[in-house]
Length: 208
Figure 1: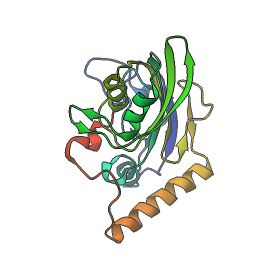
Figure 2: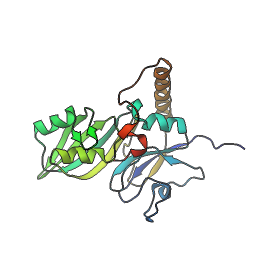
Figure 3: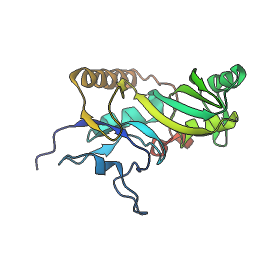
């Protein structure tokens, strides 16, 4: 039986969609936004209220590399929060926050802008715990009111409209192949990337 060709698409996921193939509660799923005869699967998860970059593919090996915690692939988010974090609060996020499931790894954090009683932060993390960015910001006293994933590994959302889908371009495909190759080489050499493996950071929990 002939297998389907490998395919890769980026969706700018809107809020109000679940990142599964089927939802027992009857909520709309991200696959309803992707018009393709191929059987594609979301790489990792974005929670119901989160928007932004979601890769869908039928490439199982690449999915594992992008989502398994031992590979430490970075994801960047823009979070609009209530209140304006102080320098010390931002430093806490950068150093790592104690959550119910343990301390987070250090994060890259920038204050992008302020607007009255709200602020927009850019956070880059290499973990994938359930609702991690929201919980990190909550821990420093600033509730997330809007969350968008803007990049995932070498892929960037760019100007893709909300709810729209596009194919990967040749540059992005090369970048993913380079990522795949580099992770394979590290495994062949017996090296371990940051993030460890398994435990409470299991890649099946990839949801923010």
